[in-house]
Length: 113
Length: 113
Image 1 (cartoon, rainbow over the protein chains, first blue to last red):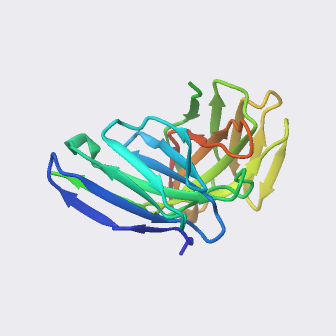
Image 2: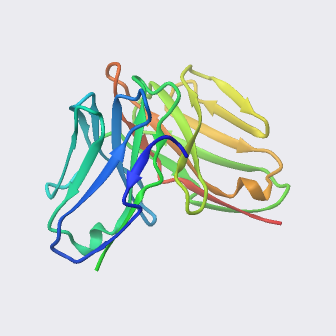
């Protein structure tokens, strides 16, 4: 157990639907990051939150949004889902400056059918 | 935007052979981190390099950060089957106390016993 909790582990949904992925960071970590991992695409950075505020944005589609709540958990909302959104979505957390790296959760595998 | 390129994409070795993966950034990095992802698992932080020309060792793993802080390498001596997985480098370009990492696409290592 890495200390970063992601739910659900698996999600199967139909095209056009909306889903919410949840992440609880490791205790004490204020930064939360979301990454998408598709086959042969590596880890694509989506968005970062720090202590409730958006800090950096990567290649996140307009159909996707995220937020970090006062208790520091974060949610990634994916809407109008397309087949190409099928991927593994990782949440990671870190202390300020990440001197000890990111701690990743076990991921949510999203399948859009 | 910042890009991190990693080669090779795949590497197949016989157990006992050495393995090296290379990472190059389009911009100067403030630090570089290395992660390992076992099949079916999540990325796990291995190490961070910060100083120009830095070399760090972890048992059979040797990590180097280039003088210009734009490239890095991971070398594994005498690979074992437990080394199987995908190795990612991730470049940091911190503009302050927070930031995000840009990951390379990874090198997938397979080891034949």
